[in-house]
Image 1 (tube, rainbow, N blue to C red):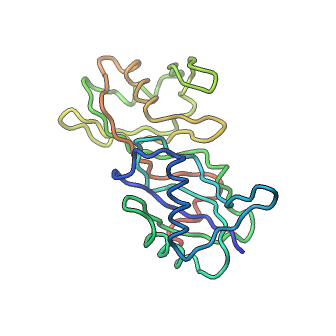
Image 2: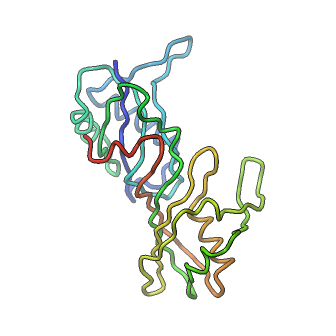
Length: 221
């Protein structure tokens, strides 16, 4: 019996399924494969499985992390191959890391790197935007919608390109239980603080996540 960290992602074909739908999908994937879940003890056993920072509907990714328990019998490289054979189209496992201790804790992931493409009007002065000491915008929380200063939670923001009314941004922002900032909220702040700028339809891709030791998974299969 072993615990593993699996790095996986999803593409445009499945970006509109919810977190709960993915959980059901993964359970069915395991049933189709040669892998066997570890189950919790007690009156209501359930598969040992924790997903770090669930993706929002409509977001693609190449850097999701899962802590999951499987019965022994397969090497990490084999688990990656087995998952990719059983996953439905649109999902992909990239790497697997066998846990020997608590060297990786997906619950401590606190930053995410996104690539965002957005249709827009006007010009965004990113340098002036990031020079603001405060960026106050409405933010949805469990208690409702309230004004929040998101500036401390934007670590990096770069314009990669701006062609034919589509701006491409790279942003490193907070995720996690302490403070979870969505790329859409950053674009809303740009609408407010960048004079003449307004965005429309956007596509969002999560490229990487950091914290909790997940960096050790780089190039490990």
